[in-house]
Image 1 (tube, rainbow, N blue to C red):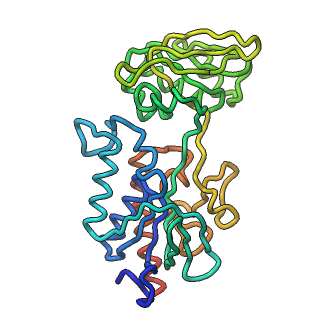
Image 2: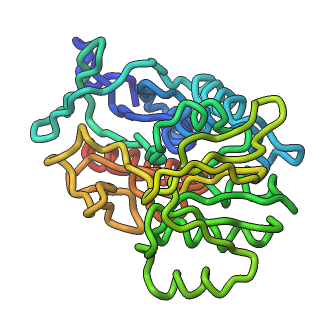
Length: 319
C-alpha cells in the first residue's frame, strides 16, 4: 500500500496513529513493515510515561536494564527505519463521523483511512514541586514497575482505594515496611482489599494525614516525607526511602469524548480480544484502553494487535 490513498493530498495517510509510547510506536513499527507508512503524532509528552521512568528492568531483551527514555528512542528509530513518519504534534480535534477521518493537530490538518488511538493514561499526582522533581528518583506511580528497586527499604504509599491497597500489598514482597498514608480514617477500597492489607504485618498506617512535601534529592534519593494532619494541621516528618503514589490514573481521552465509547473512568472500550472500537476503522491500544495491567510490554503487545487489526481492516475495504 502507498502512503496516500488520494494522491492529491500529501496530508492524507492510510493509517494515522495518535499517541506515543510502547503502544503507538509498536503499532507504527508493524504498520510500517506492512508498507502502510503510518503517520504518528507523538503529542506533548513523546514516549508517554516511560519518559519519566529511569531504569526499566522488566522489558524483555534488555538483561542489564535500560533507561525509559532510551527505550522509547530505540522504538522510535526502529519504526522510522521501516518508513513511519513521526511528528511531535498534538491532536487537538478529531472528526470520526465522515470518511476519511480528519485529525486536527496544533500545527496542521490530516486525513486518514484508519486511525489507532494510543494516547495512554496519566498517573494522578498531587501537584507538589518535590513530587515531580523526584519522580523516578525515589518517587514512583507504579509498584509493579519499580518495586524491585526498593528491596529491604521502607516506603510510603499515598492513597486509600483499591489501587493503593494493591500497590501496598505488592510492595511487601520487596520492602521491609510499607506505610499507607490516607487523608481520612476510613479507606475507600473494597472490603476484600482492605482486609488483605489490614492483615498484612508489613503494612503500617498513617490516618488523617496528607503529603505536603517529599524530602530528598536526585543524587541521594528520598529520605522522608512531610505529612500534615488533616484535622489539626500539625506537620510531622516521616522517614522512608521511597514514595509510591496510588491515587489512580486518568486515561488521555478528552479529545474523543462523545466520539468513542468509554467506561465510567474514561478508558476506551474495545471489542476484545480485538482492538476495534465502536467506530469502524478506529482502533485503540495501550493504557488508553487498559485500566488493569498498565505495563510497557502489554502496551507494546496491544500496539502490535492494533496495527494488524488496522491492516486487515484496510485490506478488507480495498477488496
